[in-house]
Amino acid sequence: MNANHQWDRQAPKAAQEARVTRAEWFSERRVVWNLLNALIADGYYIGSVDDGEERQQVENDPVKALDAIFAVDEARFNVRRGGRFVGSVYIVLGNSAEEVVSDFGWHDDDEGKAFEKFMDDFDALEWLR
Image (cartoon, rainbow, N blue to C red; front, side, top):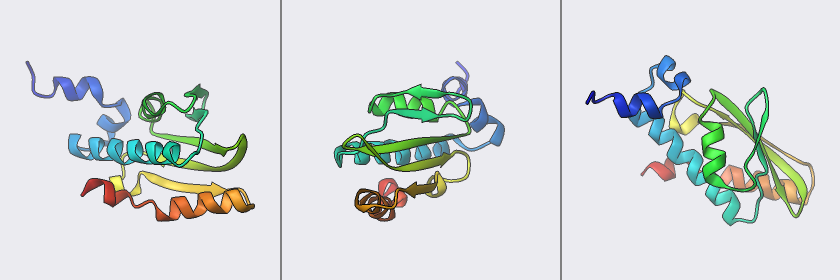
């Protein structure tokens, strides 16, 4: 079996075209996986992932969210708490694990500011050590 066979099947076409290494691709996955789980553990809710063309319903399932995010080059998801929008996260693949969480925004209220603090405190490199 070709050593790259598994890589070819698992990596999104965008990652292959960008020629990121397998290690870089899995490092990005690790950071996003840990961000999703940290958000959910902290009481945040992720209902869907927007890939720029359509919204994939994920219903707070980190596996579904990760699959939707890594099926495209970039994705955005909104974050809710207590049924209210508090912020959004923008993921761009192919740069580096440290930069995979490209941007985030928050609603200008107490819950939004708590989300801002959560995201400011999230250290992508901490999850790669």
